[in-house]
Image 1 (cartoon, rainbow, N blue to C red):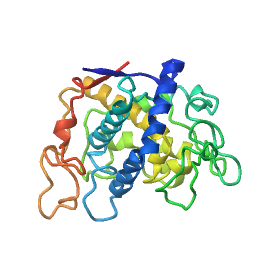
Image 2 (image 1 turned 30 degrees about the vertical axis):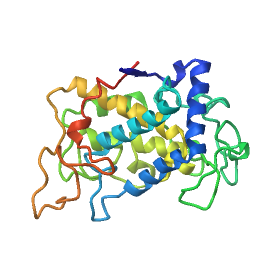
Image 3 (image 1 turned 180 degrees about the vertical axis):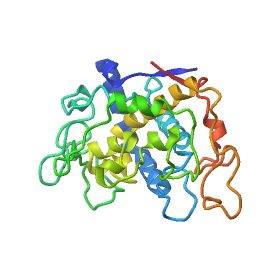
Image 4 (image 1 turned 30 degrees about the horizontal axis):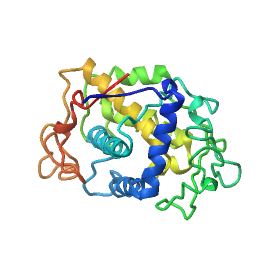
Length: 288
């Protein structure tokens, strides 16, 4: 049965409660932390000289599509009516957005230690302890807009520019690719500091706290963010039906990306699926 992922702003109160309840139950069972560990394990930068399938690579989009789908299936084993909503950060782009209400994602971190004190994922509530993070903190942290080094969320105009790309990806198939939909949506760009981070990356930096780096799954808003990224890829696929996944064939021996990226029919860990198998989601889910 094909299910529907909705904009988080369109969820009913009951739908919000069911989503939060299912996420908390996954956490209680220990399953949620398995997803955190997976993302940390596969968060490989293009400077590490080994295979990378989750970031700075053409398979960024199909890998996260599969990751998101596995998470959604885990939620549905608890409550079959639950789907992963999406956060359109070009529209709901302030800390006052309903996304951050106490009944859903909770709000910003407090000054000093950036600890989130409100909502169902506040450590003080006793149900959300961080077990696998990049620091020793056991609590969820956020730093909306990074006041110490201000950053804004991507605008619709900036996103529209990316959506006009007509080629999926291009050599050297990493964070330095000068064009291509994947790298521009992932958000790598020339420059330093905030200038280096666009679109997807910029959202992670705007939320701040645990949303930075490989342990970003510790913040449940990760899933709503990536649901929207997946929606954008889906829309791009519809607009560019002849623009397939690239590279179609593995880089040859001697190429700087030899055995470092996944071509169209190469398997992506940890599931063993290929990018080709993740191109069409129409029989699994759709977006409202």
